[in-house]
Image (cartoon, rainbow, N blue to C red; front, side):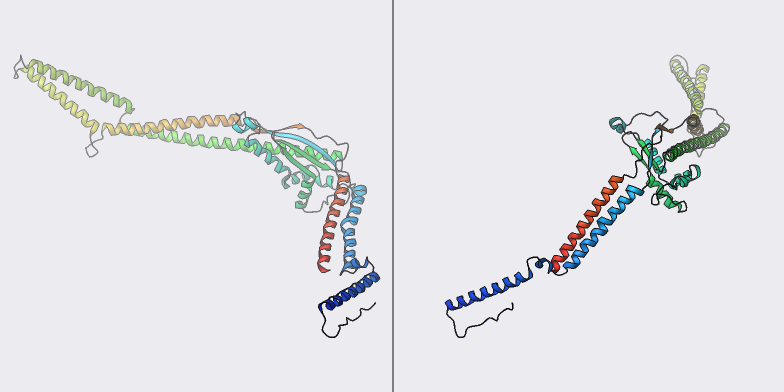
Length: 417
């Protein structure tokens, strides 16, 4: 039905006529629109939007690509084709051979010391290293184990791939975790047969123990070499200081500064005492004996001799460097200094000797060692792949991705309509 033209009445209209005219025109427009909607049908309104056919094709294609095909592949692979993988488990701990006191953190939390945790982390990092992969290839036939003919194509190892990819494959098939607070290492190794998994796990434990032994040997050797060097240096220094002391003794003509000091002090005190006695005797005799008497002249001579002897002793002890000949105080100072160096060198030599003996005793024992308390045993049931979980995860992930794509398509369609 075609729309009829709107007829405008001639001449001016009153407000009532104008309202009636507008009402008739609105009724005619509603009738035309009703007939037009009746011909197209109520369901044709959604299909008439721009790009609706493309949206429907997009929804179907994304469902196939995101949900149907991946889910079918997951069901076929995990349900029918994927090879069983068996897990061998081992538990061990790295312990210290030296009995040490508990620090504050260990006493409060039970966490091992920092040194033990560090050594444990060294072992776990070694398990995931390329060095261990090279060792397992040479000793445990790692390539042959993971290139098992019964394994499926996607799980099997290609023996000809580069060593870096083999190391990544090994990290995917093994795991070494530290369980706190005890610091116990949990080792899991996967393989396509139970016996292969056990053999690889035993090889990893043996290699980790060898690593600990090598660390022990290197630590003992370095400690012993350091203690030996320190002992040799202390011995050389002591010999040099003793030689210097002997030279000083010969040059100064004395053996011991302390003894010489005591001797000089005793002589000075004796002469001083004698002088005091002579002066006292002279003063006591002045009142009764003439000053010109031979006895008084003799006392004066003795007093003068004692005073000269005291001056001579004082001069020997306190003579300046500009005076001729060495002073006794300088000689004693030089001798005392050299003797002190000898005492320090002897103390260092004694300490170095004790450290060398301790290093030799420590070289006979282990500082750290690996204790394995759970041995790998063959598994009776495969743990991997987790078929139901993998299939369900694939389906759920596909549905989520498909829903997101459909939502984006709906947003784009509504903006284009």
